[in-house]
Image (tube, rainbow, N blue to C red):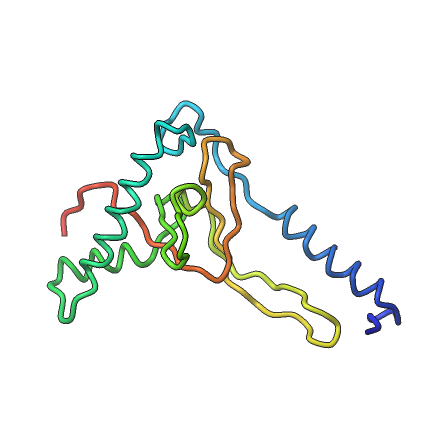
Length: 155
């Protein structure tokens, strides 16, 4: 397949440039080395697993028909995480305690280049800080996150 400049090499170069731009535009997290919330140390893993389980179970508990107003408000908050929220990824079928748990930095739509023939497509991407270092940020696609309710709210 020929690229826009008549060569397959040009097509590959465009794809590499698009990937580099996504990497350059990747947001950074916040230095949280003094805060053990996102600790990746072995002794922190049971706490992370507990918070993931509690968040998933509360989300499931809100999935009822004809919910009370309080449950409906909780579901709305859980289902629509905002930057700064503690979040859990819920669509993977593997353990998410490591990179699927953290602070939501940003959720945005990005264009991804496939090929000259197929063009590009838009996808929703999630940037989540999963560890204490500002570079501990992972880019998720084709997934869903829910917010952990970390404060008592008055409804």
